[in-house]
Image (cartoon, rainbow, N blue to C red; front, side):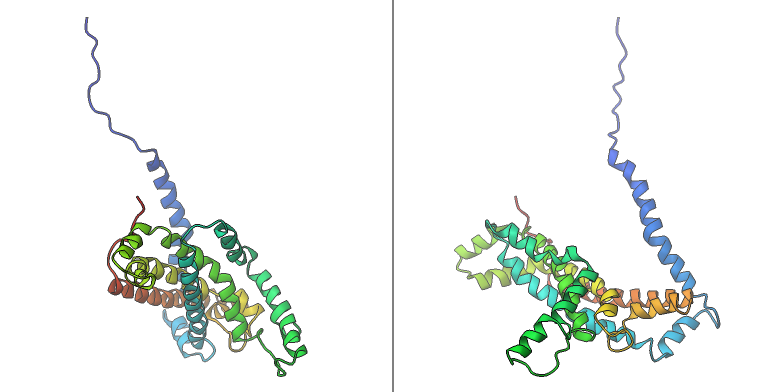
Length: 291
């Protein structure tokens, strides 16, 4: 007596496929729908034609300059954060007994938040802060020191809050490069500068570009620092403040949506330019790969 068995091959089922539909729905509800809703809303102004909000923004003296004001804050802050994070991360690519402690100290500001950073800056850098009093007490600087409630206060705040983010990103990229590549180059006579220029820097180019884009988007959306440490009605009137005033002071949500769309479009231009330069600089794998 023979027992019939099912010899037909069974398709392998991946349980991860069960997460695809919820993840897609989550992305749709959290990102796609708000964007489409804001985009449609921006073309439905209170008065005028469908482009009235955009025309109002670019013809109003206290609105369109906010783009340049925000760029003057976001671009220098991003360049400073990436520029300082790169050499520090490069030095810390080699594991030491103090690496974990140093990394923890460097990323502490990211846990404080914008409000605590602003409070600390007012305590140390304000007109009656410790730094001005120290400099004036020892007659190192006799004039008035203004590091808050102006452009420099917001820039310093963006550097303090954005540096840990850029540092952790670059450190993760640089530790993913196989150190065997540098050791092989050293056996061929390459000094440390040549190793960095010809091995690490080309392999880091995609990571640096991505880090720059993420840090720039984070800095471009500055709002609390511009209010707490800047001059919202003066040199630090950024585009996010203009959108806030349109939405919650003028109750013109259509205009606020148009300002938000312009804000996103400016960010998209900068990100596309950086990614384009990355492709010109280097094309290849993101990292050397360990093992």
